[in-house]
Length: 239
Image (tube, rainbow, N blue to C red; front, side, top):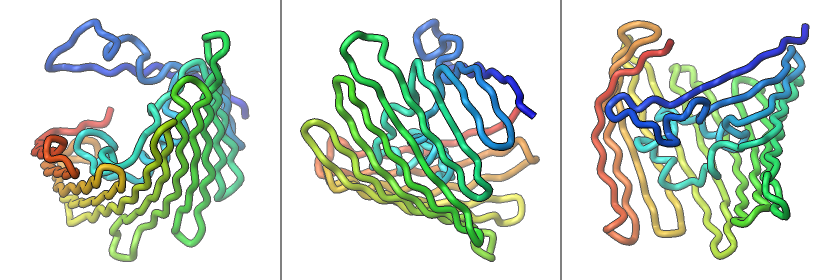
């Protein structure tokens, strides 16, 4: 049946908690809506369809340690004052999000995606269009599957536009389980700026909800001042 729902998600910086915008209540997600087996409608602030396409394929969880973050535009990741719709049609999922401007005369932000899973392969396409001041546009397509060896592999290509530039990027990522260990790797390339980024990582699963990880990330660009080198160690726990 039809269910009412709400969600509030807030980021917490445990090493340096402050009262800045990054730790305000509901800064990640703040929505109310309805859902059933055929789809859902939510209103408020949350990740939009274009960003979720990356979340669904990236074993590095999109962020500082992910090679995808250095090559692809996430188009802001979230919309404010928006309506989020999803329709479920068996193996096909359709999403459309519309963020309304709260400033008179400024246009809206729109994003949507379509994905389908057949024979263990998930194909998806997504778009983003901002009709406000920045006029950003993005289109992307991805493929993801799990091989008989239990290796998860995925690839994505994107085209991003601003009022002054157009760029193209592509990435491949993979994750493979070895007992209680997981190993993963990824590579990204972007033509604008000559960006090449890669990452390798390994994790040990103490349980279904707790793991420790080691990640090495490198990003090189045409200008050496923009090069990145990161080594990270962390513990993940799912509540």
